[in-house]
Length: 356
Image (cartoon, rainbow, N blue to C red; front, side, top):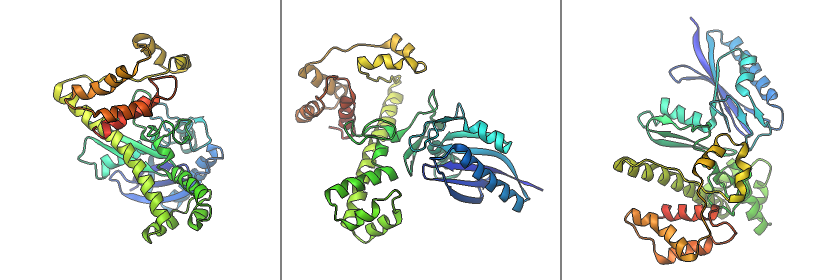
């Protein structure tokens, strides 16, 4: 009697892992191949297809029941990978391509969402309803479960923790924004850290060895275990940045939701935008209608009014923000012509995380 298995595919920026899994979660076989993201997607699909055929020719007791794909910027709703930052494929209908090649039902989601589903079904989160799974690789991804459901959002891209900004004047991310968590906490982020350290210490032999196209993670781990100061500095810096991102997400998800539930208060999401950017939103689905329905223009505020904006949310929660912290936030975020820009978001986020 044939045993049904599902083909699971984890597409990464550097490598792709695939394997066959039973309905009980038992991994029958798995392997890893280079993604070769600079080549057309059909190259990767062709290599996976050839390996799948070889597996079933040697293991005739199994039959393929379906395919599940986890990929960066994989959209569960559309079946498309949409311009992943670390791959050069653009927008591709990967579900249709696999169906055509493999003649099998195929589903797609973000790679981190797939990891979260795996933890919920077979892992440590079996009995959890609210949790976050963070995946670290070429980039950084996250899958968020809330009240027992995976958060997809209206467009399939909710919960992208890797692209929250921890420094709006920070490093340029592959997505085009500045200061994204992924620009610091990922293989690419660590490579950037190594390059910046090498600029300050060009004779450092460990940095010279590590500063290659592909980081030697084993060497970095070994150097850290041996107490190498440079390796320790790299890990501590990366860990600090990850902690900043986790603090932002944890506070946003846990404290806000708890207060809303306890007091039966609806949650509203407010986002700010520079007025000269509004015209750029015309091509985004649903955004022009929302702007037309709910936009509120805020005039330029003086220093005292800005201080009130910072203090008021804390006052509503029965807390107080120290005056010196208010002054620090205003002084560090006053650059630029638009007061409602990202600098204020950064300041308020940190104010909340560190609880004044």
